[in-house]
Image (cartoon, rainbow, N blue to C red; front, side, top):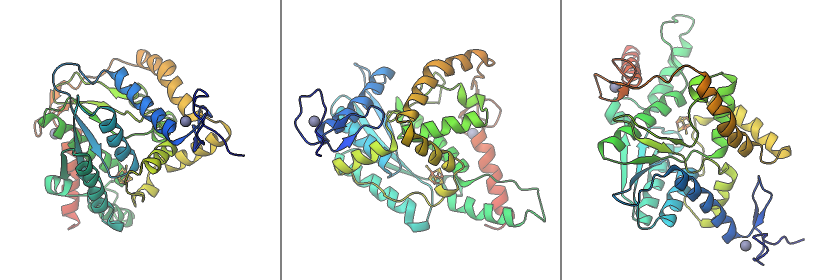
Length: 334
Ligand code: Q46
Ligand code: ZN
Ligand code: ZN
């Protein structure tokens, strides 16, 4: 039987998608409008768009569906009163041409929407990329029996650090008021559960979709797709014909959260809306309690002696890590 759009009983079009958490069947136009409205709601709640002055906003792009959809929605929703710019971090993941193709796709959408595009190559700036980390990890693991001196974490751990650092630095250096990232509901629910398992209080007391910075050299960050699931984003990209890289990063299969994500998606099959209610209720009820109960927030009140970033210690975590990686790469002649 053909299902019809249930948008306030006004619409007589055929439904194309059922919103997972509300079970609301919608036609193409009303589905797209529903997603856009939910994104605009978070933008409004975070007050990142000022009525006066310039609204210079940076979107972190990866060429994947999340950031491509975010860029399209932002351009469509705020055609005039904000100045949008796109930044792509070239991480040097060569398998299946992953990084190269991602950059081309991100740039192509920026060109199409007339948005300034920038690219930062981590190998040029830091002397190594994620492929180098991968090679180093393989060698260290192979040599474990001989030497336990060298320790290395997974590729994603360094990748996350490089991206966060360079996105923030670029935003600070170029006077952006806020950075938007494409983190979605599915990934956020997965990280939350993972951090519960690890009892990572530092993460658990952080605010959800908006991290407002009052620290010099640290830009505020907003995740406008926080309450939009991966499936809804894929549907939005498909229905709006938004070009994006369809393949996953070759290192994503080793990402520590992948099994938790699969389990959450299975739970979602019989507890519809489980992920969205987990995030909503956690950030409304539990996060404020954890924040109040835990020791006072440590402030990033020092400036890194090497790079000038805000830090707790004399040298920031990024500079210490990159220095350590460069030394280890040299040791193994990579
Ligand atoms: S790009 Fe980087 Fe992701 Fe690839 S290495 Fe991991 S973190 S999976 S978003
Ligand atoms: Zn409709
Ligand atoms: Zn530093």
